[in-house]
Image (cartoon, rainbow, N blue to C red; front, side, top):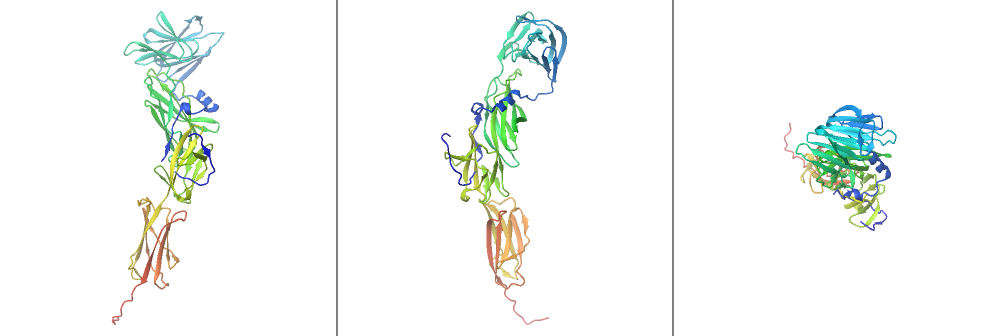
Amino acid sequence: MSHRRVVPLLFGVLTCLTGTGIRAEQNHGPEPALRAIVGEFEWERPAVTSTQLPGGVVVTTGPDTVVERLPNMKVRTGAQATTNTYVYRLTRGSFDVTVKPSRKNATAVLVYTPGGLSGAVSQGRGVVRVTQDTISFTAQTAPMLVAKGEHSRLLGTGRTFAIDVARGGFHEVSLPSAPALFLEQGLALSLPRTGFETTVRMKPDPNIERYELAFLKRSADEWISIATKRTTKNEALFTGNGSGDYAVVGRAFDRFGIESQTSAPLVFRAVGVKLPEGAQQVSGGFALTPRQHLEFSEVDGLIMSFGFGESFVEAPRMLSLPRGKGALVRLFDPRTQSEVRFQLVPNVVRAQIALGSPRTTWPKDRTLAVVKLVNGRGHPLKSSAGYTASVSINSEPRPVRWERSGNVMRAVITPPPHMPGPWVLRVEVKNRQEELVGRDFLEVAPSPEEPDTGWHW
């Protein structure tokens, strides 16, 4: 995809919806606004309760947490004596502690758990969790003191100390790494009514038990979360509606329920596609008549190529069939190095017309006109809506009532009362754009006169 040339746009174009993916490391330099949003992004949580305490302490508990507040006490963490130490006994659930650093009145939070264990947080963030199977202490942003009876150890930043209650033993592990994300389709087409979808994949990691992903959309100068998904699989499908810039961020959880930092954002573009009336969405692209145009939105900064050539043009806002023929179109986003391909194909509709029989005479015979609408492969259309059939006799238009059913139109045509024969009956069928899709004619002779038998009543 290197050394692209930009050439003038001479013709409209054409469209197999395929795309190239992007990884976080290929998603070059998300703008500072997005990085800031991600840095301040708050993940959806179950209902939690946060309590602010004097000394710059915030404790947060989950909905199923069972915790008891005990009298304050003085403890020693490392070589620093602390005062105003808040004490809790955690029986079940999660207990999240944040202590802001203070040079005047040092503060700590001490949390007791079943099994005679305890953890003390004197600065930064630490999390204590108690489940049926495990008890864990996580030093999220600063060291944390973990103890049992008279024995203690200083847990380093970014480490988790977990005791396996069910199977016995203990583990000290690092915090999970932020997930490495990959977008299967880095550039998408947002189609009428159906929108678009994109698959986010995560690099497999045996230490990760589940993922949480957030889907963001740019709105003016901010990014808004429009969907969040939790999955134990290595992929997740997101759907959206509307053109614009989107982003995906994620975090990973290990088997102890410890979460990683938020991943680097993956940014991608959804290009809006507006189909003209009567155009069809087909497998891999769109079917247009020669006079129709596709309209695109959010194509600023994108470039386009026809076929597999290396010459690119600035992506236009309208595309049509070049000289009535089909072609492959490739839209490319230089920012994310991603691409989407689609086909434009001629929307071929033919009218199969049957008019009476060659032996039809007027006024003796009824003339039945039957119009069947089929596509380029001869398959019937779902409906005749949008197509009109007109009748003329000897070049004079005649009003006719057509009955419709599926792709078929039927009408009974009678001879004109004051126009002597012979006659030439013509039927023409056109689409919404007044383009001719079929016509046929029938030469009709006058009916022979009945012989006079001489009998009169």
